Image (cartoon, rainbow, N blue to C red; front, side, top):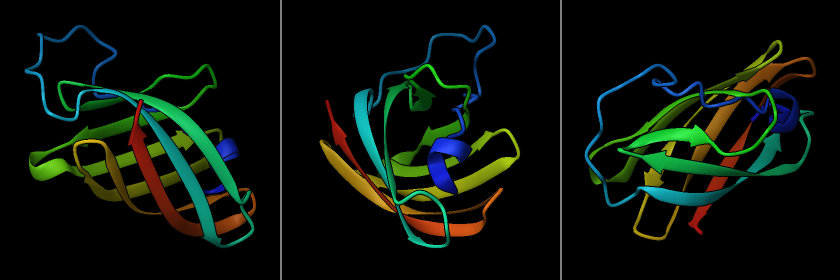
Length: 121
């Protein structure tokens, strides 16, 4: 996502604040996500570790990224990511162990877009 290393925004998950325990979903657990740029001058690819808990997507790394994402019914994924002056949004679907979708965003290098794939860890 927009040079997802630069844009590499975090999942300022809807809940860094105290929240009641959320119900487990079939998608909960650790995932590895590969972000690929197909259009624009963003970096070609990045890999990120994320955790899903109660359907809420959280960035599992240490970079200063903001993620606001969720996995809904049928594995539908929606996420907004930001870092510094860059931002991107993505959508797609997760299955039991794999998933994928598309993203688009804007950062210091202009507009970019591409695809993402995910696999359970």
